[in-house]
Image 1 (cartoon, helix red, strand yellow):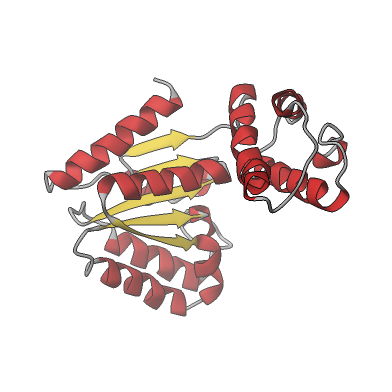
Image 2 (tube, one colour; image 1 turned 45 degrees about the horizontal axis):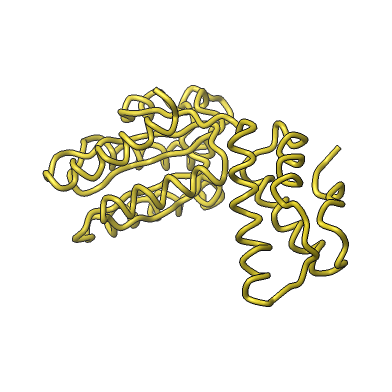
Length: 234
């Protein structure tokens, strides 16, 4: 099935599982773009009616011994949620790496063990969603806890066009409608299609920056919107 259909099924399954008070599935999305990660987070939380929290491996890793306490606090806090909690772990590979790695510190090993302890059994009140650009670096016990794994490739041409249309609306068109900025009339669809064709390999985050760059360029310089060469890398 297509990625969009898989995500719809995942969101619907989360909703009905919560409604039936059954054990929630754990999922992981790998090589995920910034835009898609945030969209999935919001969609899961809104459709299920559950609370959600976000932690990043980059925050846990530098905490040393305090990381263990922080992990327990998050799970203890999540257990108090009356609506249930979706816990998003971004950059999971930063602190949930394989225990066989020789460079793994004792503090990181303790954090991993604490996380494994708190996720050893399925739960009706908490759903775990992790994101990683390096899923092969995750400890085998982490992968064993995941019921679903979804890969988010880089946006294709059609997706880049859709994202550019979205960010153009947010960062330019809506501001023009409010009267915050002024731009000359131009064929926005043609310009955005051209940018989409020339931005192959861009991630969702990079495409969002193109929208911001267009806004700043039009607001600051008042130049023609078709002059968009500054909006991408060579």
